Amino acid sequence: MSKRLFVKGNEAAAMGAVEAGCRYYFGYPITPQSDIPEYLSRELPKLNGEFIQAESEIGAINMLLGASACGVRAMTSSSSPGISLKQEGISYMAGAELPGVIINISRSGPGLGGIDASQSDYFQSVKGGGHGGYHIPVLAPNSVQEMYDLTMHAFDLADLYRTPVMLLGDSVIGQMKEALVPNARPVRELPEKEWAVRGKSGAEQRVVKSLFLGDGELEAHNWRLHAKYQVMKEKECISEEYETADARLIVAGFGSVARIAHTAVAMAREEGMKVGLFRPVTLFPFPEKALAEAAGRAGKVLVVELNTGQMVEDVRLSVGAAAQVSFYGRPPGAGSLPSPEELLEVIRKQYDDTAR
Image (cartoon, rainbow, N blue to C red; front, side):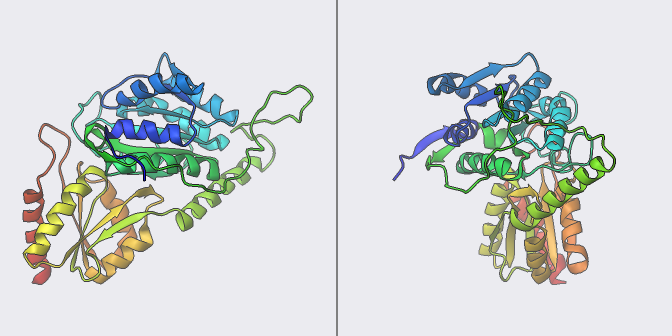
């Protein structure tokens, strides 16, 4: 059995990257994610890896693009404004079908914002923050253990689908400490990187690009990307349910707020209310079918987010007319985290309406 460790979420993600075989990191410091580059700057040289603090976030994402084109496992990390600067490079990676892992330990609010817990980057992450109408898988951990496990999963998804993959967290998940069991990387059959640029004299030329100028080439490329996203929707959705089998009200939330909601739902159950929790782990692909089934049984969904309403739109699209959807949000700011008791009061009101 692996030894239990007591580490931060950010450190767990860095440890998961190392276990997944990542040996190249490019980044630029910004709170609240700086523990990730701090850890990797110390550990990668011990493994004959490379850590480069780039001159900017733009430089970092383009270094990731170059390393990925050579077929190695590489990653970058940042927080909200830094992720914004990386968006053009992420779009280029998606267009060129290059794997890589990007971690966003998000800040709060637009502009410089702050380091309070926030889920305001949902739209940017899930809808394709750069140009061109692409998508990338987005994973939303809600524990230190998942920061480790989902980082390893992200590298496998990236290689399996030849795509950037994002891990979306916040200051709660990134900065808190709790127990971690550093399991070995799961074995998964992955395709050979026969597309990777090698630079060998006399070898077959390999070209990695996102520019297609031939007649009909670009349209065909975009349809191929679209087909890949549809396969992801069919095969890669992950969600977690708690007490949803007989629930008359489903509380839906992701990441850190789902932890609080879990406690509130357990408290509601103690009061005799039939309430359940639905937690999307993949934000893209969004677990539409699983949510629709749970919501269809319950008839009502309460979406809780640390913003003014973003994931709620995907919830409404998923459940359609099968359930009534309401929203409770806390935008970024000092003390923006709701308490379980606060969410319980919201649940009581929604449950009373359901009973009537």
